[in-house]
Image 1: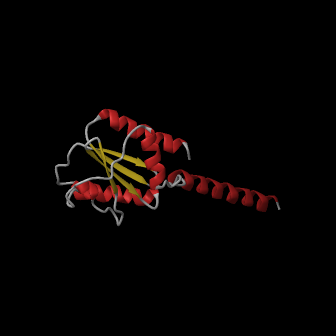
Image 2: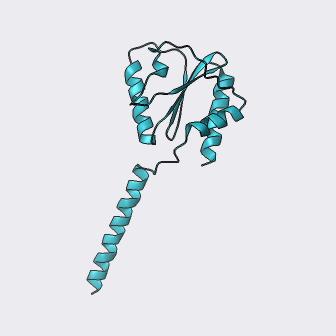
Image 3: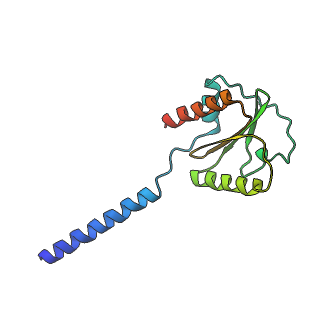
Length: 144
């Protein structure tokens, strides 16, 4: 009887350790954010999002990534491209696809932001706006 009990405790311990390891390797995905939530935190940072953009369709920052077409904004004369993917994993695949597309190209100065299912590119070296966009996403992340 004691041998069976010890065997059962051993099996439960091993199963618990395996499931804990799996959780650490594959953390549960965070909250998926909507386009509206992202737009709101950005505008709360005092950044005006102008939908009037006149970009050529071959611009790499406005092309579909894994079936997702970005929302594109003009921010103080610079492009902000915002992809809302169905999941974090899809966002990771989207960024990988972007890197594959641009691997051999000379890409203009830009900043990429990643948060859960959100991928955002700001095509400018304006550090003030870059920092405010980063703060907006931090605020969004803290709100989940």
